[in-house]
Structures are given as structure tokens and as C-alpha cells.
Image 1 (cartoon, rainbow, N blue to C red):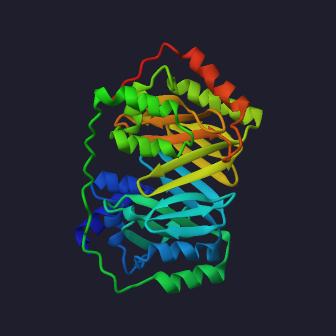
Image 2 (cartoon, rainbow, N blue to C red):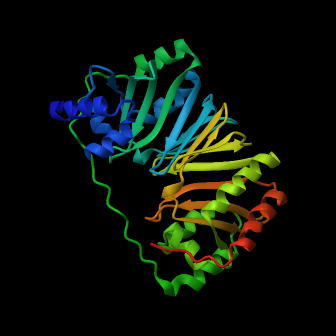
Length: 350
């Protein structure tokens, strides 16, 4: 145990009450995992690294809150884990409430955590990647299965596991961005039949996602302003439209499908504060907002995609759709209305 780090964290919590652990880790220039490890034997217990098996047991937890985040956005969805499946290093949870795409190669550490937040004890299972960054967290609610929660704890907590500070420094991927390949890339984009093939296409050409949008500007990708993005969300709420909001990190994508109602801005945070779904978005970290069109066998699919100043994808938003069913024309017309308004904007590409 790193006693020096533990004391620094305690001192910081005394100076800044209710400081979230992610912000504390950033302040102390360590990972969130390193802070949690200082509490092993107290409020934190290591979990067996049998993550696929753990996921298959999540339905036993009952009604919980699932949290996935990246540096700029937090996605929280309440519900029950359903329809779990694992295929090698990928897994799925496909329910109406909790809808996940899981990439297990990026899962490294797991902990059971008890903490006191606003005078109430919170219980959670938390998972982290090789760099010590949070991948996914599962929080107990008043409606969770007490028996199921206890059984999962007994099955997966392993107090014999020691933490040896195996944190890896994340090395940014170097990309080719070869301009000579752009015509072929755009031709393949034109001939897309499934939105899922877009990621395969990016890997084939070794293009980052935002570089791809940059080269397709005016054809398949269109820039709108951050202000118009928030205005659009308010319109979506007023029109009672069903949408899909994707937030992810290298190890997880979490999806909300449905309506959004209670929207509030608090400082730099834009929030959706509905009973079953919360979103917390740092608007000051949004660098570019793109409207993106992808041809499919079911017609054009239009999304909104937000990026930070390092080209990282923050959030994607679609009109509600399923394979074989065309996307809502109302959604497409609404989004493209902002394209017409903002068609003179130029992207700042990093």
C-alpha cells in the first residue's frame, strides 16, 4: 500500500469535501486505480479478473445503475442487465434499459467498493483498463437484489489479490492519414450498406474517426456549432423524439434509447436528469460537432458526433432505429436544418 499517496488523498478530501475520485486522481497525477488500491482491506476489495464470467452474473444483481464515461461525458442508465453474451474478447448486454457493447481486451482491474457519498453508503463494482482509467461501474440501488448482490460479491471478491502498480502509460496511436487514399475511402463510404462497416473501413485506411469526417466535409460530414447542438437537444425534448445516445471509452460503449426530458445546464455541464437516464456533458471540452451521414441498405442514417480537442469521440447521437427499419425522417430533417444554418463553419482539425 502506498501510505504516502493514501495520506495525500486524505489531505485533499479534507481540503475539498465531496471531491470525486476521478478529479482527485487527476489532481494528484495518478490513476483512479492507484487511489482505490490505497483502500484495499478497508473500503475496497479486489475482484477476480474473470470479467466475462462476472458479466454473465450481472442479471443476478437486479435493478442497478450502470455508468460508463470518458474524459468529457458521463452516461448513467438504470435497469437490469439482460441478454448477456460473450464471444472471445467482445461481449454484449442487450436490454431495453441497459444496452452495452463491451471490449474485454481493455479490462484489467476490478474492485468492489463501499463509499460514503452525501452521508449515504454506496456499493459498486468498478472496472478499469490497463492505464487505470474507469471502463464501467455498476451501482447498487434501493431496488437491487440483496441476495444476488451478496452472491456476486462472495463469488468474485478475492482478498488474496495484491496490487503491484501495474499501470501502463497510454501511448497515442500514430495514424497515417495518407491523403492519396481519400478518393478510394470516399468511394467505399458511398457504397456502405451497414453503419457497423464504418469502423472496419477506418481500420482498413488507418484513418482516425475525425480525420475521416474532415475529408468527407460537405459530402457526408457537416459541422454545426456547439450552441446549436444544445438547441437541438432542447428541440428533441420538446418534440418527444426517441433518440439513441452512445458514450464510450476503449473498453465499453453504453447506449440510451428513448426520450429525454429534464435538461439543465450547470456551469460547464449540460445535463439530462431523467429518472432512469442521466447524462453529464462537459460543454467546455467540446471542440467540434459533426452531423454525419452514412448510407445503408435501409436508407441514410444520420448521427451527431462530438469530439474533444485531441480528436477523441465524446458522444454519438442517432434517431432511434433498428436494423431493417429506416431512420426517422423527422430526426434527419431536424438535424440537417442545423447543417443549412451552419454551413459556413470550418472545422479545427487536430
